[in-house]
Image (cartoon, rainbow, N blue to C red; front, side, top):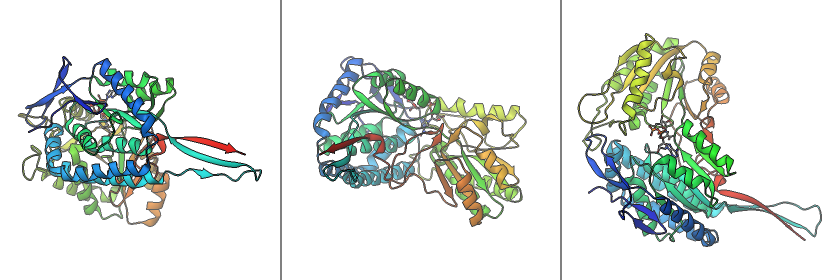
Length: 475
Ligand code: NAD
């Protein structure tokens, strides 16, 4: 049984009643899983109004009460993980084990926010006169509107929801129409955990229409978006025109730097497996592989060897390590990168063409012989496709790694402390992973710089985007 789909507004699950709806498709089988109702303008207005009404009391709620609800949702996530993961695999495509992993890590996100929301501190500033008291208070910003993508449907939504609710804000969230079951499950869990009506509202629809309505409304005070750079820039511009705070978690084009002195086979094995995670549809996926000249052949051979043995298929099937691309639009999008590479005379070492038959399957693909101005080296691929190119020295590779407008994640393999220090100082990225992959834990900040975004989610920073600063002085 697939998840029942509806809107969730003011504590009510709403569907039907003449609303437009869209089909939700399984990307592995093309089966229609369900019908997702679109919010009308009246629904969007009702969601905003109910969030505004709920804010008047939620902002005064005890952090202990907020914490208890977040903790309860963390526990429900663990309890319901099997069912939610199955639905997520069906509408998003990722292998069941990955979907389960996402849920378990998300229960940790709930716990982290449950703990941290009890530690939102202000401060006392020493006065110039002994009769004066000066305080800095941090208060919830108000009604938040959020837009989350289809690649980690549970993770992306729960991080924004926990941060908003934990800070004392209320939220209207538009989830991903391609893969909606996880966000529906979240709504059900907060409902079951006793969240007051209106604190969390879930809507669906045409993304541009919904975001335009919610951001322009005088009710919303903060905009949070995870998705592509072009859409993020549009939404940030609209938010700016209405003087609204933004958190933007946007795309990247994460460079990988493998130095001669690294454990090259270990690096190639780890990177190959990391590359095909969620079929490469990960904003922090490694996407530009720079390998130092002496290590190049050994790296490439091992990298290909691991990728050739990856089992691609329906994520519900036993042993499958990589599922289909999440929706139909992704197949031509990935093919364009291969086409551009072929036209430039690069070598498609493996993969390169969609897998024939049912479903949006694309094989792991490796391309060599690319110049730095090739499309695959400059635009975020968001798929299971990897360009591998050689480099000579550290200054050159840092210059090439930093040459794009993105700055999300980066990966370095070296056994030299000196090199590790120099690259961690020199890389223009929000996250630098050296000799392992350690980003995206609840207790660590996650976010990009340059075109990759504004603000962080997770870590002690997680509530910053949801709080305003108020200075109080009295005598
Ligand atoms: P897309 O740009 O059409 O959509 C990306 C996401 O933004 C989707 O969830 C979509 O619903 C949403 N969106 C699009 N227009 C919007 C609008 N005007 N208002 C609010 N939300 C809007 O592309 P796509 O084919 O669905 O995804 C491919 C691209 O999206 C990738 O190349 C990648 O850069 C980006 N993406 C990034 C992340 C991430 O975690 N940063 C996640 C998913 C997709």
